[in-house]
Image (tube, rainbow over all chains, first blue to last red; front, side):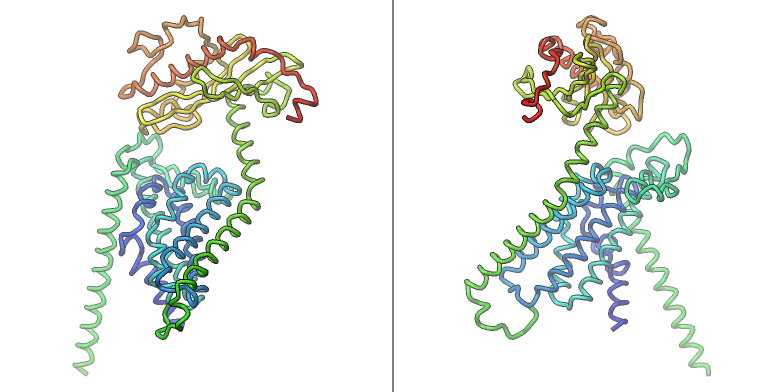
Length: 229
Length: 216
């Protein structure tokens, strides 16, 4: 069983990552990732929705019929997003001012409906929650990486305004990497999002290939060693 | 879903209808609960936001009342209602602030304008805009001191025809690469000052604080 959970975690964070492997949810991804903090906020909000939708949809999977499943899933996800929107407006208001426009977009995040359809509606409650959490964390990872890349290249800072999101203790995260940086406008604007995303996707492929090669070499070496003995 | 053998009753249209109806009811209940739980906090935050932006354009020493307590509703020149927040000392109106807006390069620019009783600008700040980052966003005080250049000016000083950017024969700087944005801001402030001139008596009429008004 723990093997199954490890598989889910690997899938969500790396192998089947919403952004890096499935290339889904690009709309919220490109819209909010001007800074790493915005990416983190959006990622955490999406994760909360994915966990809760995994729980609810798995809980009700026995009574939902295939004919009406799509409207029911959409309804559940829309309610959850609205609740996240309201609570962010009430309790992390400054971040809501930055992200507010994009929070309702979580509804249109096809990855959430996708996980509801392909995982939560076929699995028991705990694995579904775990899958939502891992997929959400994978999405958060992608958002933070992209945000950090664009922020460093575009504004020369990292995690600016992190204190708005996490409270004043997070102020140490706010770095000014390049003092007196004039800014690189292209990277901040939406085309820059596509550019940096392209490099990140290429980087992930490259990393996967290197790991694969190393594994193959290791297997070869082992095979050679065993045939000699 | 998932179970290979579906019971017969689940195929009936009635079951589907009840299912959808049930989920809609559940959704409504959850949203109502969420709304009740967050309503007060959200109202409180919005009030803080408003006070925060008002305090940027109206110095605290200019009034001793609660700015949000008795806003004045006036129908503006374009027929839209304008909510004016007035700072008073005793019964003397000492400072006024309201929201103005202009049409920028990429949509509406919302600003808040603060005036003293003589119609001089105490301060202007941008509340929201969608101008090009790096070009038009110099109207933000965080990025450029340009917007502070309006402090102390009024509709007679400089004269009305000089209330324009330099490119249009006025006296205010445009930004290199962005003329539409500062033009919109200058025009919005000019309109705001004209609004003050038109409604001067009404605006400076000391608020009559009777229990009646307060209740309303």
